[in-house]
Image 1 (cartoon, rainbow, N blue to C red):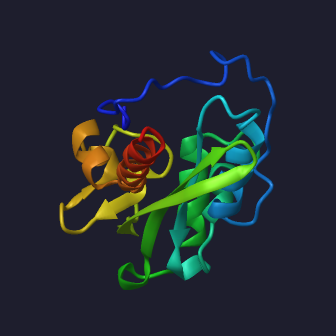
Image 2: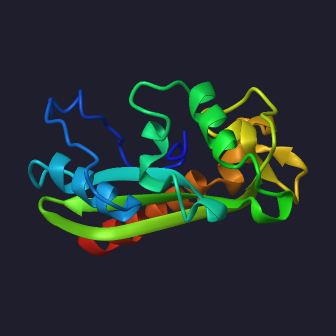
Length: 184
């Protein structure tokens, strides 16, 4: 859990009785994170953190981006999304397969966005999947400096370098500063 060390009490939508469903209708990760944070911030009792993340492949003009989960169609499995991605990159040589995972966390209080925290992790899309850890595109996201895919990393290793881990640490720093300023 990325916020495990947080001094704050974390809760979820179900625990707070929030049943609103906020769609990811934005054109960017930032827009989707904002939409969800404001959509779930039903009152001022607490701050809301919402994120969106995705894979951006340079050779595909930044695709799949905010459509990462739906890239191979609604209801596609991780394996189907990976197969679709690899089919799109079939003729692309190694040196042109650069990619990045990005995560944006929006922090809202009521209808106001207080902060956007972004994290990114750069890598290369491999020619075939490797590893069994993680989910999504992790088996084809190769990290040259580690000589492993994301799916070959332990959860601790992944959290220390991943786009979500970086964004979460930034969000935690903001929350600590915000708490200190509001509790003066």
